[in-house]
Length: 558
Image (cartoon, rainbow, N blue to C red):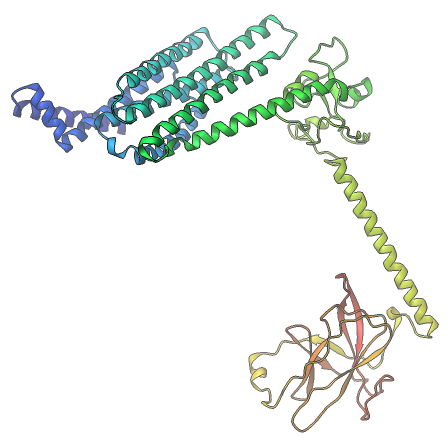
């Protein structure tokens, strides 16, 4: 509705501009010159030409293609964005030749590209749709191909004949190459259309077959020939434009990259697929009755398999991963990938067959619409790595247990109790208590923390480490006892100590200060203390970590 209103307004403005020009000028020629020289009048005429082009395109679409499918419309929008970007890049090279005729040919080029895109999508969809195709649909599509081919050839010839040999390559040269590239793509689409028709004819005359094996080879020939011709055209266009302008045609760089990568990828994939298909008969075995009893559904075509009334393509083949596929389906799949479509294991190569799990779901190919959960593991190499990791973990655990047993034996020989059963009295608690801002503000100005050596070495027997904070007029000595067998990691130990309102705090190699709280039973003295003055013995519980990162609980006596 909005487009109809816009079209009516544009039509009215065009009639008004032309009428004023005819009334104010004595003849038609002078009226046309006045419209051409007036920018506003020329803009109105160009707008009307654009509307006529859109209406003509819609009419041709309904005539040759009917209503477009949702996928075709989506592809049109996506490609139109890239085409608009290419048009802006094209103007950077031919900015001096941007005039009325250049704009006219540029719009005509975009108009023809849209129909080439529609034909390419319609050729692919007409043979892969669930709806029945009629002879009328094929006649309309064939007529559109013939009509576009004639238009491409005519415009290419027109641009070539209207080139000025005395002038450097300009807009006509560029449009001649563009229309030639459209002809190349149309020939490629026509080749695919003919191959699809031949495949349908072959399947109708060979009901026992489900695919035409020769199609892949001929499709490869058509695609490679089209890509090679297109690449040569791009190279010629590149050097023709680069010489006079000194600037490469930027609008074709994306197409050149896509063409080159597509050509090499297609050739390499075809070579690998041919080698794989040649090695199929030697490396892939035919499935047995026992294998089919476990799973008789092809994971590609989803049809049941049997060993009765076999044809060449319906022969069930068992892969090294125990998945079973029709020979014909597997051959077609190898043209796309060399891995199993379910578990992604390599199809070819000397791989050991994974043992069959009889308790697994027998029809695992039909779970989740063909997505198979591989119970045995996605890859034998990964399974072996997991087994090695588990074995290493078991060995490390055994070594750790042996070390603990040896340590307990040494403690028993020295008449000491094991570390797990050691009971120290009196007990105290060491916990982390970050100081708030008020407590930090009340710290004495004379306090100077005294850095200590780090306790970063394994302690075989009980050791005493002195923590000596120094103040101006007094030296207090405290003792920290490390139990036997405790291994402190690197950098873990007492860093400094201080006295805050009668509460002793020791700073470990962390950001927090830990407070030492004596227990009520702090009357006994430590046997390992070497201080001359009597002091209360307290023990603290904290979490210590060994070098490997595992945590163990240890008691520290101060």
